[in-house]
Image (cartoon, rainbow, N blue to C red; front, side):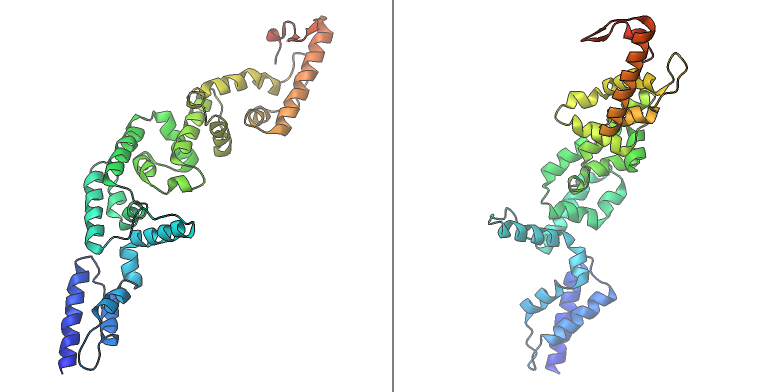
Length: 301
């Protein structure tokens, strides 16, 4: 009888402790009861440390404190490399206090789904993001969301499916830099695509990323992407027929592809340009110099 009473009391204590962490589902409670029973001897002595360790290994617990799982993995990676870990796992109380601190910073500044979702907070905790760093990220994210001009917001949506209400969250996500393209690169690509659109050209994600990546060491070059498409526009005449009515061998898409790094299209454009230069030189007797055909600015090139 003593054993049954001890088991019941211990079970109730564990129920109460983990319920305050938001763990009170039937499956989890059944797990607690089973773990307590398995770790209680005939005299009613309970191996509390073992019980807690096994409770923390349950799927429900690990999902609730997923940030600690990320931290565990990062700690292991650092140790495997011979590095000294710069942080450790958090106990439940510290974990929840950090969640609350994050929520206070994020509340009314980003979409509610970002800070109401424990999985999003787990990413921040798992990546050891301090409250100071998060505050700085929030400020930058708000600026990105509010100050980005409509054209850039439109391109973020078109290229990456990022709605305006999601921009702040996108820039806050600490794992986004580990994806195929970082938040900053996505922003630069959107700037490039917006510049292209102002020049009357529609480019796809791959082309925008090519130009943004090619200019990533020079922020001013990315911000001046209009110049890139001004040059494309100057070359666009190659895509239309020549003055004698002959059909062009290239299309507007060929011109755009050449401008975004397609070597085959670049060669095609060079061939078309040489053809035009030869035609104009033969028709007008213009002299060809090292600087090109004299008077070419009047030609359809």
